[in-house]
Image 1 (cartoon, rainbow, N blue to C red):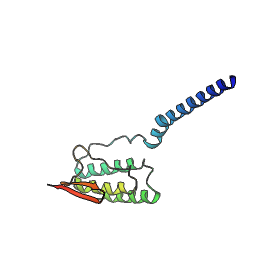
Image 2: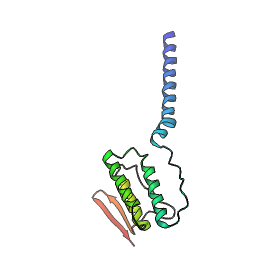
Image 3: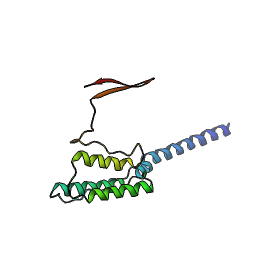
Image 4: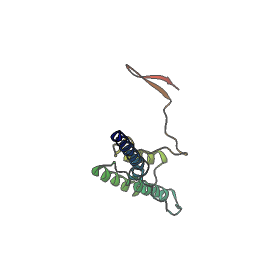
Length: 143
């Protein structure tokens, strides 16, 4: 009978240890490894639209530098594209800049790396409603 209790206590201790380890891993280690703090924004107030755009591009570059999903070649290409954007003599319109940054983000080739919408620039939507059926995607409504 003692052996049964010792086994039960040992099993309970093992389960508690594994649970604590899993909780520590999930709550402390993984967020630190996969969700680093974003860089601090420390830019002077821009004097014009071009300087504001360059600050945005610089911050975007610092932000994606934390993303580990870029391959070495993709990281090099992303840095090259951002350097071209920073070197422009005139600012791009908001939509063109967004597309350029979206294309740079896509180099990560990772569905979790994305450029979200902002309050002043919601994601573009087409006036089309489509649904997926067994025989394919069908357009349900068009405005």
